[in-house]
Length: 450
Image (cartoon, rainbow, N blue to C red; front, side, top):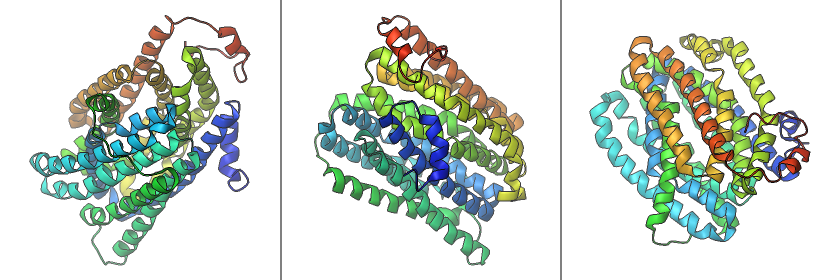
């Protein structure tokens, strides 16, 4: 793999060196796949930005954000219970796979009905007409794709977990390329309504490929009656994911819902850049999460947290600096309607570092304590973000949204660190000397995790 992807792998090998050969290999698969996926997403983003302009892009991203929040609840967290259960016992694959498919399909039907009613009451007609296409794309096919990715993560087949998002990104680039050509050839208007009629096709094709890959490589799903305990377990993850989506995306929905489509497009574009360049952090935790579930008690978890942070902090700091310094390129790439996104991106450039920190503590809380504790912190963060956005967006538009995002992520870092520290300090300190002698620790300060 390294020989075929020298640039990206050479960059990431230094990051994950010292984490253990297996974790390093799994992380490199995820980073290589998501690195290539990031390039494809950048091409997709440019094609759509150039085609739609800031206002129509704002309408599109506002509806996508709205559906993203609701779809986290519609799946009832089944993809995360699958990841947890199958990581611990591969024999539970068939039942977990079948349960996740049942809930995802049923939840998408409910979501579509809610979108048809509640969306009509809250949104203007131009935005409401986008909802069915986005629900089908992201609420159904996108969730099925996520389930398939979690299956491969849990089974340790990271090359497939990395390949599926790349497949979706490649298909989206192809569809966006057709849309770009048709718009610039004068064959269709450059509107969000025209785009969503094509948008869902790429996700549908990717989810079919994913479902076939899981079935061929691992087996058929087992159809069993859903039990109350399974649904309750899933709800903790569903509320967690919904809280994440709220504090990441509610600002875009509020901007679009208030008719501030230019601001939604400007802020959405800057936030999208942050999401793309944060992919190395996502990749690392995608590879490490099953290991957090399997870690040997609090000391094993502490060791894994240290390894992750010691290697990830320098790279994440470089990402933040690069965002600030290179933000001026955005109007050259997307068009002059996105000129204000330069300032927005500089406001948001610290978010990758904040995410790295609260992902580290949050994943440890999920693995060693209770997902409900992490969900509680995320719910508080979501409430804080909604409150700040409702207060600040009418006054300062995208600037209010950007300030609320930075404050929310910072608050989540403090809450996650506090929860972990208060719990871990009560645990026995056995094996502390062995940990310090382990590879990658040495004399490094443990202050990040204790």
